Amino acid sequence: MTKIYLIRHAEAEGNLYRRIHGQYDSLVTPRGYRQIEALAERFRDVKIDALYASDLRRTQITAGAILKYHDLKLNIDPRLKEVSMGIWEDETWGTVVAEDPEQFFYFSNDPEKWNIPGGESFLHLRERITEAVLDLAARHDGQTIACVSHGMAIRAFISGVLGVPSEEICKVQHGDNTCVALLEVENGRVEIEYYNDNSHLTGKLSTFANQTWWRDDGKAVVDLTNLRFEPMDLDKDAELYCNCYQEGWEQAHGTLSGFSKEPYLRCAMRVSKNDPQTLMKAYHGDDFAGIIELDPERMAAERAGWVSLVYVVPEFRGRAYGLQLMGHAISYYRKRGRKCIRLHVAETNAHALAMYDGMGFHCIDVSEGNVAMLRMLEKEI
Image 1 (cartoon, rainbow, N blue to C red):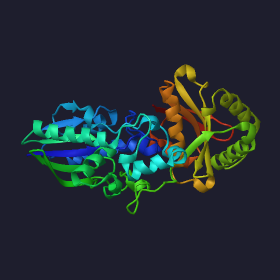
Image 2 (image 1 turned 90 degrees about the horizontal axis):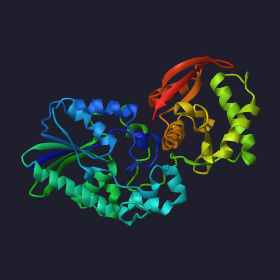
Image 3 (image 1 turned 135 degrees about the horizontal axis):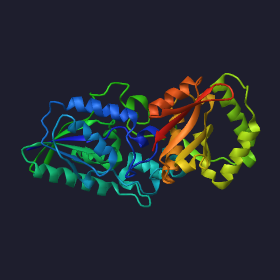
Image 4 (image 1 turned 90 degrees about the vertical axis):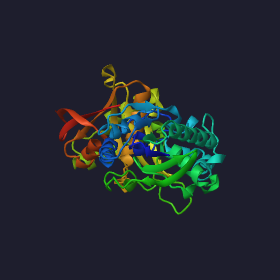
């Protein structure tokens, strides 16, 4: 008999920014690293004979929790990786809900019917993760091993063992980041001692404690906390852009002193005409929720990506929508080979500074602004 701890990876960018990262090789977030520390303490005194992870960075980094107190080799097994999301990879969940609601419903509620270009079928996902578990169990008969995998892959495996049909997949709830399942495997037969156990995480460390999309009453529903994006046309939206910039300036500085809309509008028009993806409107359902503005020309020589404006409308503040806006910036600049992103934040804007600190930004310069001192913040991507 083999004992297998099947562990989901720590919080990664897709989890935080609400982007679709199946086999997209995203990074672990600052909270994810704290989750790994908690996971390490959970397994400090647990006997582990072998360690496996998928070929994606977020599982290999999470496997460091086991390596902290166990002298083991990390073995890479591609069969443990997440489902391929095809043309959905690195889209926002909000965009997919708006553009392909039927396939989103199938993915969430009846995944055997889910079928998109380039996507891996749910049955193939279940077959390969099951093959991996049974193969590793046979290879380590009489031992205890740990395997770090992914949310949908683990859900497919658990539902298969429990005999849950595709149309009832919601009976197997999603698991939190770094949640643990304990399996006992003997002669090809799998017994599940427990699964989705995140008892090592406090409320502040839990990803799920800070999100609501996974909570349901048996059926996954369209989650309007996920933003969708579309380019902003300044021939039509110039007034909206200026009003948002003005309100954001006043909110950040407590005054309109030093604000002049014309230079900001001119710059936005010039850059967005070259690339519409640099100026995006975000929507909460059908309601306008904010703006993300980028300037890829600024600091390009330093391989940095500049973020000119992050704006959330007042009624949607306090819901972590700024994180989703920044997710677009990271996606945009990573595709273009930038090594980091940078932006200015007024020292008086405590809320924004706290958000960026939580994302892993650090201050690299301080300069005098029109109203207050400005911190230049940087985050490697």
